[in-house]
Length: 296
Image (cartoon, rainbow, N blue to C red; front, top):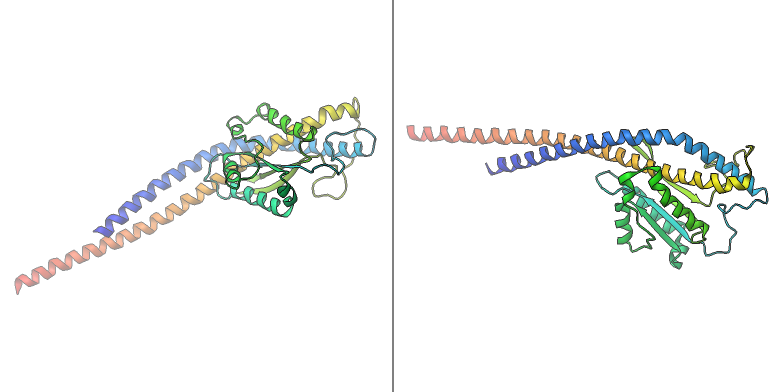
């Protein structure tokens, strides 16, 4: 009977867990639909604007027009800022672990010299990334965990302008964003994106994009207006990508947890029935044995 009671307690516990994971899956699915709609609507505009930005930067590099957002000549301290986009909550599979793993890879394989000199800094956006960076005792410049509570372009603009200003004031010579790019509910693509300096090469291509645009009023005004706005959009897109990927990862993780709980419930129910059947059989044998003893 003690074994039956232990199985009943565990069965009840697993059923409660399944209810929780099933509810979390539905909540994540609801939030995913909204986040997915936002990133899908923004992505074509952001990609086209980034294409124009790359072409403009390439055109400026062939003229004498000063572009303060382009790569600087070597000779500075080569200070680097890595921006990590993680979540504030867990239970989303390997979503956060992948970003942390990529960050550690960049430190060891790409920025070890800056790390040793103290010229490598981090800006975590998301509590999970912040906790890991604190535990590793790395140089945290700022923390911004509140941004996901109201993720709009107006609310992110202040932070993106601050990051841009860190480059313009020569506080940093390179700024990169590490995040999960949303593909679909089950797939997130880990991405490391150079935010600044602005590149004149298309991602994954060896040749610069065509720059035969007609600029109005002039290239100087374009540099002052278009490039900062494009950078704000790129930063906002990365946040929306990460936000949608988080909910997709959580929905998938909770779906798998619910399926695992269902399978465990089936096994425990079978185990309980077998144990109960064995207990009943033993009781019947005891009754029969007692009856036979009385006859004797």
